[in-house]
Amino acid sequence: MRSGSKHIERTGALWTMLASSLLAVVSFTTPALSQDVAPFSANPAARQAATAQTPPGESQAVTPDPLAGFNEPMFTFNLKLDDWVLRPVAKGYSFIAPQPVREGVGRFFDNVRVIPRFANNLFQLKLVEASTEVARFGINSTIGLAGFFDPAQELFGLERKPNDFGLTIRYYNIPTGPYVMLPFFGPSTIGDTVGLVADGAMNPMDYLLPTWITLVVSTGQRAAEAVNYRSLHMNQFEEADRYAIDLYGAVQDAYLQTREHEVKKLHEEQW
Amino acid sequence: MTPNSIKQFLRRRAFGIFTLTALLVLSLAPSRFLAPAMADEDPMSVVKTTVNQALDVLRDTSSPLAQRQDKLRQIVAQTFDFKEMAKSALGYHWKELTPAQQQEFTNAFVAFIEDSYLSKINDYRGQQVNFLKVSSDGPQYAQVNTDIIQPNGKDAIHVNYRLLKEDGTWKIYDVTVDAISIIANYRNQFNRVMNSKGYDTLIKDLKAKQAALAASLANH
Image (cartoon, each protein chain N blue to C red):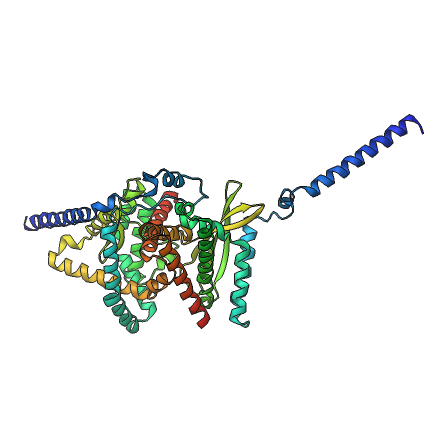
């Protein structure tokens, strides 16, 4: 009974947080909503150009970004956070831990997130993929030494595939809403943010341990994961910035194209 | 001469005149009617030739860097449709520019893209390229899928080339890297700059980035 009420209290708090931050986002960016987006433009020339014949894979359409007023400062914040905290820490860490270890740590974090991947395969009625996830987890947690290695792929040919609740939303052709740059988490959409919360709620430890422990542990885990990931992609922002005219636009488009491709792959595969 | 042989002679002469006229007309016709029949290379061999030529330059570490860069520039110029790429990257803003601005932008974008690829010349670590498949998208368009195999056992990079047929020859108009279209990515960036700051800022930024890339190339 005690734990039950606590749980309700926590989900209630979570929803309040989510709702208020969404409200903040919307009120923050209402002026941006009226910006001139080519396909919906009042200017007939721009509208006509937007529907003109283009080669396959190309489009004249403009990526709508109604939350730009929120996203742009958040992007700057994330870059600064990376510059001042994440990158130096990752640099120090990569000095201590050799690359194979860091790659193993990356696989470990990937392995423990089996439950959301399994569940989302079920949501998409992908029974083979769902059982593949179970098999991968079983193999990698045992002979893969708690997930530090990936014998499931290397020995059994069971491929590692992404799946999450944001992809489930897309899989059923539900619009995932505007692009949003989350502090700490990086590029997302409103739908992917809901997915992030939904997938996060699937951690069984949340229901077994007191809140403060899981909060500390999950924050620590997130931070460790971020540091580990960054240490494996040390030059990613420096590299990207060399070839970008507008880094925000480059990151935004790369994120949206990647998500689009991931869901296309989910539709293509057999089950 | 019998009437029959006269008839035959006339017929032959008529045929001869017909053939001559036909040859004349054909030789005067624009060469593009004949060109496809002679040099109709398929998209796969166009990509294969280009990539293999580029790999040869990358592997040839004995020649001076400047010479290798020049060679790479030539190879790329043969098969990439830079004008189409620049136009496509600018999206619906292309029509807002004057012809002089369009030319200026195309030149700046070509230089920028070239220097981006050239700056990768020293990153080559024995990567291999697998040519996977070609898919047709109507008579005008095709896509060639390739994988870049990394030497250190890392995941392969999926690189696809999008081609269009122009005057009988296949030209590359976009490249996707791990499913991200490079031209679409620049289009989003250019759109943002055009909408918020306009063409003057865009061309200034583009030239500045290209100059930075060129400077780092010269330092190697």
